[in-house]
Image (cartoon, rainbow, N blue to C red; front, side, top):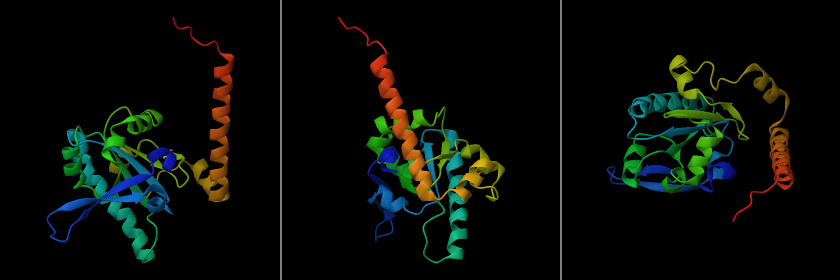
Length: 204
């Protein structure tokens, strides 16, 4: 997930006085290790629908992960979320983050090139938007924001299509990761080949 999200993610933790919070930095691959579903949440404090949806998402997030806790005392989360901020400044970012229970991309990256790259990659047309990825970074759904209100109990979570479910059942994680890497490499080679074939623009 480093290629997608960068080397570090943030969480917000309360200080001993119980009144103030501070950012805590985590290595991306370590904090997400073992997580079955990673959600990328594009949202901002100035967006009315985002402010309304965030509490619903917090409730859903806690419900999904509470099921895991009942099965095993200490275990990786079934569901983790990484907030990709669209807030206009760091103060707004910090204030809005206090309403969340999950991780976040650092504000400079979220509002910079990496955040824009993710928005383009997953064709985010508006916010709030919630994209779900599997444990090797493949897309499960780009429409989780609309699926949660229709399935509040999470019966169908993470809403994989039947073919994807069969693929995950039959193909081990290590092999799925290798297949994804080979596809990415092949795509890069094809694009490189096309660039070498196509005429380059002439600059004056």
